[in-house]
Length: 242
Image (cartoon, rainbow, N blue to C red; front, side):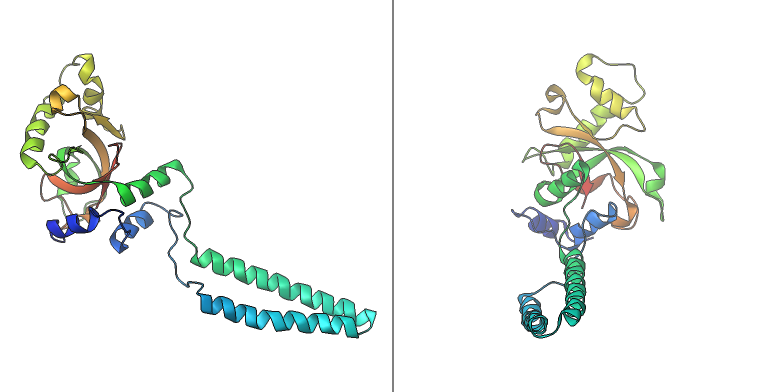
């Protein structure tokens, strides 16, 4: 994995550029999220198309005005076919070169996270045991993170708070202020994130989120520590791996 300081330098700049590392996240999230530009339609290609098409169109109209009616229909049909072929070619090139914006709200949110979300150090509350093994498939993990500027990379703070949250695991139902936190800690299926109550976290911008961890994006293809570098939604709604 790249040096921690290098990642911070690259991904904390604003506005953030989607480099190949972040583009790969969008591609791996599913088909249709983003289509790579393979054959850009440069101004040179555009001028060449105009230079070739304009004389050809003029030649077709010249013959239409000079020949008899029977030949005119033949030339008109040929001209129509050329126009259709040209339109189909342009649509093909446009489809190959344009950037396709995500269609669903989820994909739009993913784009927002990768472009604007803050970099955070997310601390494991719990994770599938297989994520610690080499060659593991993707697995679910609960991660604690904070958007507070002085807490985003504070391991001591995150360690302390993880210990307090883990007490809720398997325990009796707590008071209502901790109900959302208790539900996600004791669930194997709840997605998204919940805010850690301010009296417990010491601030209103600390969250507990469920994340499907992709081992291939980890340093050694598996979990090796209790922390994962992530990019968070600007409002803490979810996490994405860097």
